[in-house]
Image 1 (cartoon, rainbow, N blue to C red):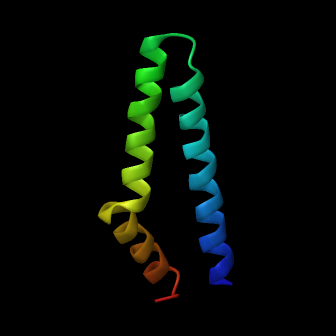
Image 2: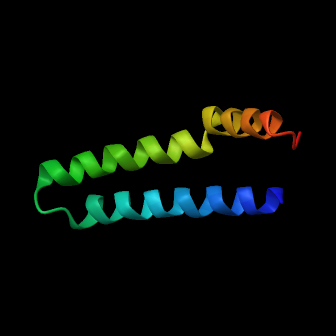
Length: 66
């Protein structure tokens, strides 16, 4: 069961990163592209950095997987 949670988390993060990359690369003006890049950094480091990992571990502990 917990495999589905990990797969769902990975798909959700991939969709968010994909949308931010699209805006950062193909934004209509420079301001929009810079904001897209900032959002991309925020999502990437939030999901894969220590804070995201700790949040994931805490959620797994809350639902009884750890």
